[in-house]
Amino acid sequence: MDSGGSTDMTLAFELEALKSLADPNDVFNGARQWTEYVGVVSEKPTYVVTNFTRKHRVRQDFFSGPRGVEESLENIRDQFDTDRHVFVGIDEADEAVAEATDWEFLDVEDAADAAGWTPATPEEATPAEESGRDDWP
Image (cartoon, rainbow, N blue to C red):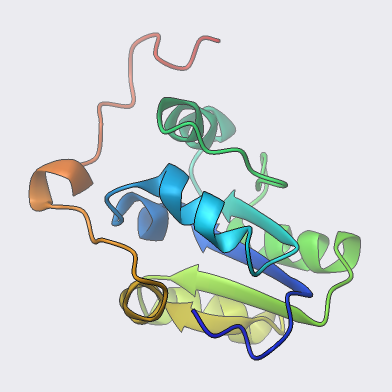
């Protein structure tokens, strides 16, 4: 993926965007080659993000915690001082949040094309059951 010539970048994935990719661990490992920091933000409860990242062995530098996406992006921007802050999302609502928080927006399909990431099949992209005890460490 063309990072604009600089690896001084913070890259945030909206959880649903990351779920739309076949191998989230591979995505993060590849992104680490051209970014300084990479993580996941979501409106979902923290345990949902944590459960997903553990299941897929994704090591993130930050996550949204109990905050919503907009507040998370603002806090991440303040905490991680890089030249670029790029938010990978899935729709116009994600693009609006990126604009409101002064992040660059990149649609996950465009990002996948540029970086060579494989989209998930419909079966892989189906949300897992979020109830039960899968959130337990």
